[in-house]
Image 1: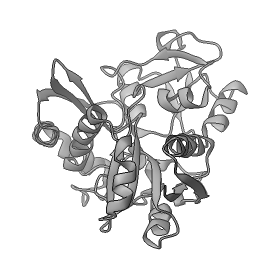
Image 2: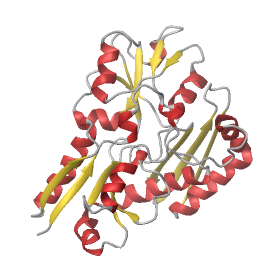
Image 3: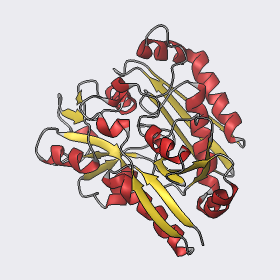
Image 4: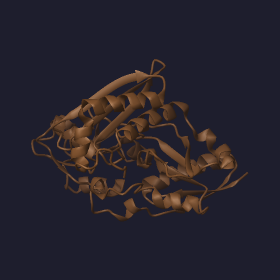
Length: 311
């Protein structure tokens, strides 16, 4: 069997994900090595992600290692992977998705409704902030960066009354103790690809494709490709006020797309069903653009950024 070198970020969650894929590959007889690579997003920890604006901030350095042949595959949180991969790379597999929803964590409060007026909520996601403020404009949203442990520790130390994180990362790390509420996708539309892993290789690497194709989950791939198509149609990246959530229902894909102003003053929501993931993503994206998403995104990025580059 082959000797496979995996490129991964060094955070606790990224290492869990890389080791999870390593274990699946070893079960098939492969020898696996792990190379930890520090990305731009890992180096910039004191600025809200939405303000960084660097394309591929969690992926570029890993792709450089892939291109140079230092690693054979990269394991990413799919929501961190830009929708348009640079030339020379391909997304060979999208793994079975775990719970894609966001969750509310708190020490003192049992749910979002229980938070008092003016409560301090931590998130650095414009998507989460916008949908939260639309529901509770009285809440005070503060930036929250760092790995999962750091964010949870800040909550425990009383810096925040509540924080919002992805259910998937907490579940994978076994850190679910402070989860008080799973937020419905109808209220808090998740990020495109949230809960799934993306496996990236050099384009045209037939041998690697053959080794890794077993990791691909058909339903998860259809749903997340649909979400990523919507995101691409809107010109957005992983740090913009855009939500996308698709699921298979009665043999069809149902896609919900959300574009919102960061202050929650305007939220556009569109839901459609279809069988072709790409066509459905484009349909919902076009509908949102016609309904006013262009103006919202222009205002977020500045007048010259009607179709902004994704971070």
